[in-house]
Length: 355
Ligand code: SF4
Image (cartoon, rainbow, N blue to C red; front, side):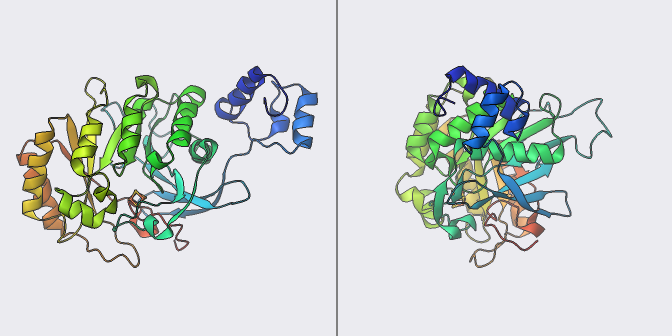
């Protein structure tokens, strides 16, 4: 509004209209004087959300949406809606929504949000990496994905239980300012809780250090995409590890002031024959224990993608890996693959237009 020659407090009215009332047309923002609305429209200002251009539906209820962002370098990103959550990021045990049975076909949901078009990190098991890095999303484009999906599913803030995971396309900590600005929009303007948000990083140490300094009221929970029990294996599958090895990541994570009962999540993708062996489980358990941090491990059986030279782990290997960690006293969950049939599962987001 300042750029449009108006007072800054008009910006508050605008934010309230866009993010709280969820209005998508300037002409409908009646808290602004009509003359101002007409002038803004004439000057080609818009309050529209990123548009959902295509939706792929999985047999398990998951939806993968292609979202068109605005601007001259228009590109699509992907946002995934997972009704009932995915058993990996439930956050706490308050996810039931009593008295609401039957009103909707879902009782709780998780939305996986993208932070960049493509990604520069180049994890070897990830389809998004194949796109390379195209551009950062703006704060509005990141928060706008959430609103677009909220509108589509009739989500009511304050009533419905929705978790946000910043684990879609891109590395949020390589788009730090826009990512955190989106988080603040979602908390301050939309009314969501940071304790229902989890951001996952591949281990961008300067980003983790900045994140550790964020005030608790604006800090989502943190997940580290670990994926290997040592630097040798991690360096092979995640080249970023050569810049920031595991110890430097863990040291940065130590700076985060956790809330009571909060845990850091270590995500661990099981790649057949590479990271799913019994010795990997034992080494991971030792490494995790040595950190002394309150953590939990979230196992993800690798999801296949076209042209990626990795192998799915055997079911028995997944179960043995999980038992080994649990046996070693490490809190461990196994994330159920969601929307694998529509390329919506972890590591599969690449704007694949097949259903
Ligand atoms: S796993 Fe995440 S950080 Fe790694 S290439 Fe894929 S999108 Fe980027």
